[in-house]
Length: 320
Image (tube, rainbow, N blue to C red; front, side, top):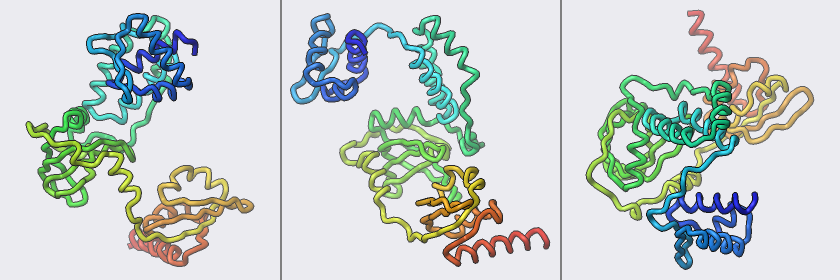
């Protein structure tokens, strides 16, 4: 990257955040801190109102805005990919807002970039998981409201349906973060009803409104702290499982195996020996049953018993 492009990119970085540390600029562009200082000084001498706070970082003085920027073809393609992902993995509110943002982005693209995007439009597809389909009685349009609540530390009142308890309850919560996992968006919040942190599936919220009450962010843990605590929580009792599968069959299993606790795999002739750590033999057995005699259980014997019981259950179901 030449210096002119780098100065423009630094200016965009500064405009995108309230405060930017010199170390962040250095890391992003792989330049020394001395070069960062020189580049910032060059921008200041060019008339850009950049302020500095000792020990904190640089900032753009309020009121200054960089004119609309141009995007490269590669950047435009990445934005199009993001739009495709948002269409399938966002909710109704976020898809709508992202659509508005993309209209603005497209409006500043050069003609060649617009033509390039149009040629890609029908050639990029993101498949939507079945679990993401909107269900009756679940509007699935609350991500934008939740982002607003997170940004302003606003208490959220919602009606939440728990499939486990099969009941809807009214909850007053203090949101600490949202994350996407397993094809679903999750809200982590302090639940005033349960007096503890809870994980709410956003697509199971029936009604939601932002209250006029606010909470203090520093009294709650961060989303990163919550997720770290969950990762470090005491694991369930696990069992070691070893099976052998045909090499050809292994190709079709792909990454699904990791959801069932795959720890290791060793090729052995025309077979592959797979080692799992699982907390439920029944759960693993129900997965393995679909592969028929392509799977051989090495250990434990209890998994063989569980598999036989499932087969007997199916047999009785269909011959009765």
